Image 1 (cartoon, rainbow over the protein chains, first blue to last red):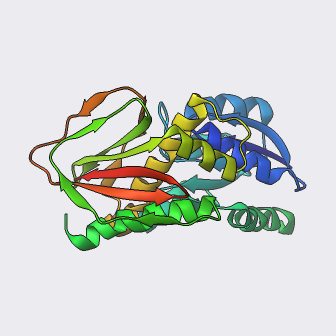
Image 2: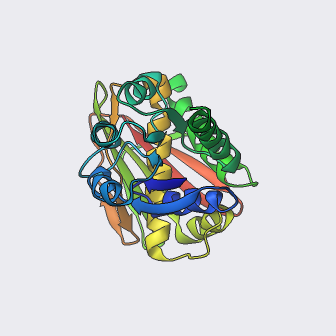
Length: 123
Length: 147
């Protein structure tokens, strides 16, 4: 399964990519904002996307809406510092499948991705 | 801002270090400031707060501290670019986590990052600004909360 990372922090991009190295997930690209994510998504067509919310140019909620409009089978894990329930609910309503609050460690990310992958395999 | 609200930011700061390092951060007693000057040794990241609340959250940290935290999170590059990125991400996370308490009308901007030079931070005189010292390993940084 291919995964794309969307975050305006290179540190967070690198962290997620490092945590993926032991898993059966192929890193397929990274984007610095929602606009870049749309461009890369249409070319790479990953099955899984990790998506930050607070980003310049286009935020993560808008990017989730637009990506799901292109391909509603994609699994999107929102990874954000915005820790309120309303934000998580908004992300899920717009097509995300999971929400991981920053800061996170390797185990937190594993657990969240496992739920996404398990769901994908079950279908 | 009352004591309970200030504690939200303190808890967020401690949690940020605890998730990213085996070494725990300690927080000193917050104090009120009317002015704050950054200097050549500090990286700063600022987050604008808007919506129901108005103000700024700033994080000031020396490069040595940021480089050490970069190492703990698994980075192998300790450049100014990465140190600035980390300062911005830490400030963004601390401010963003505060929405768990303040709600979705506590809106935060993307971080603006300033790399080490001497400059005075223009604080809003109509707001109380608290400085929170953060000690981690042998390093010290300051979180300024002006809301």
